[in-house]
Image (cartoon, rainbow, N blue to C red; front, top):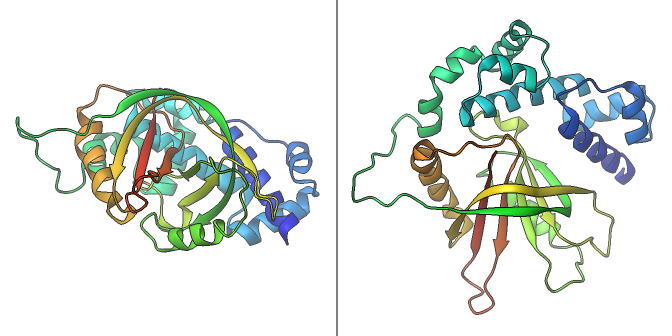
Length: 272
C-alpha cells in the first residue's frame, strides 16, 4: 500500500510540473515504476479521476489563476497552459467551470472581492507584505483533499507530527496546491510539509518556494487566518500593481520560543 501511495505521489508531482505539455506513456511508466495500465488503475482508485482528466483539470485551473492574477490575454493564457488554440481552450474551460474564459475575466473583481467587497477609506490601512526572494527548498510531505477551512487539515497535522523529525530547527510549511477561489471542494489539495525527512518512515519529497513572493504575516490562531486572507484578497490584491504567479501559495508556520501560545503564519503569495 505504501509503495502504491508513493507511486501516486510521484505521478501527481510529475504531472503538476509538466501539465502544460503532452506526457508520454513511457514517462509515466518510468516515474511510477508500474505499467501504464496499472498506474491508470491505481491513480483512478486513489484520486477519483483518470490521469488525463487530472492533467486537463490542471490546465484549466491554472488558466483561471492566470485570468485572476495577470493581465495576459486569453489567447496567450490558453497557449501557456497547453491548449493548441483559443477554441479548444474555451471549450475545455466552459466544460469545467460552466462559464467561458471571457466571462471569468469580466467577473474577476467579483471573484476576488466576493459578493460584498470590503470598502476602503482613506484612513484604512491595507495589509502590506514584504517582497522576498526565496531559494528552492526540498520538503517531505503528506497530502489531503479537503476544503481549506476543514478540521481535516488539523487532523492531517496531528498524524504528520507523529513522525519523528530529528532536527531541532525543522521548518514546517503548508502548501495550498489548488486555488480555493476556483476549485471545487473535492479537488482542493493541501500538503503538510517539513524540511527534514522523517526517521520512522519515508515521506515523499518535492521542491517548493524558489522565486519572488509577497510575504504577509498572520499572528494568532490558525482558526482566524481566513480573516487575513479576506484582507489580502478583497483589499490588497486588487489595489496592488503586482502580478501573481500560478504556482501554489505557501504558508510557513513559526512558534516563537518566548511565547509557545502565539503562532505566526507567513503567507507567501508567488509573484511573476
